[in-house]
Length: 331
Image 1 (cartoon, rainbow, N blue to C red):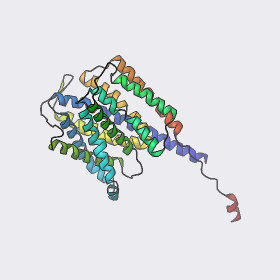
Image 2: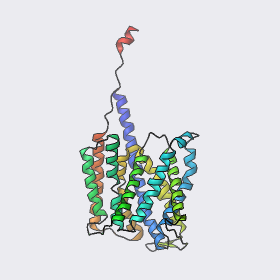
Image 3: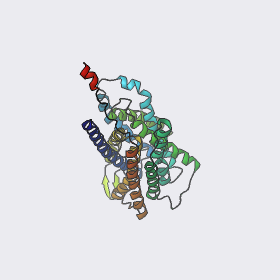
Image 4: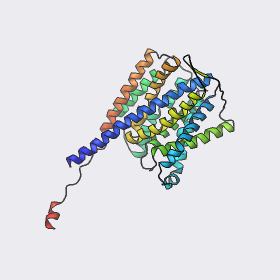
């Protein structure tokens, strides 16, 4: 019995470690998208074109591996059609479109802050929908991480608020929360790469349709792109956006959510904001201020506290029942 409990603990520990690794990779790759897109925007691309190219390339790359991962279990796609569609519309296309419109009404930092309240939304959803009441440490970690985000995004210097912009930002937050909740669902039977591929295909179709009807402005150029004095062909950041910041980012994000749970994975994803500052510094020569670095430390501290809270609220592994020796001896 002791060995079984030890084995279960070892397996859980291994899943947690791999989940943390996947979460960090996902956050880092997602964070790179903004810096890469900035170069394209400066070269004459619209945000809609950059986002659509990113999602479309990732969908093309993952669709075949995603289908192969099913191993002929096509019923999983049929039974989860609504789930994949929701993921693609809300978590992929919806989050991108809402964020795009939010920054057209308000400062980028404020829009980011609203979108990254998603971990709080995940905690509330799991509490209200599934009764997973958060531990006090989880709540404390959420508050610390939120304070860190305020400093990282440098919104304390004052920012203009717009009701329409706030509404779009909340829409982006819902999309981000949907990404973590659906990504962490282990009951649907879909392999992570299949869910990612399906969502990207749906999201790509939605974004391209939005561009065709004129809802999402799209314009692209073939001008070389510059990153802190280094000039590269336009297709280099475009491929990197699709392969690294979408294909890798979504697959590793789903893997992380399934190993860590939606709640913890959503908090670790706050690393994306910190890494976005680092990539902007390295590729765009945008050095973060001291107050932003302090905010980054608070984000890290908040995630650690949340992880401690998750450990306290985890279910205790029940020991296996002892065999009934009386019945065996009677036989």
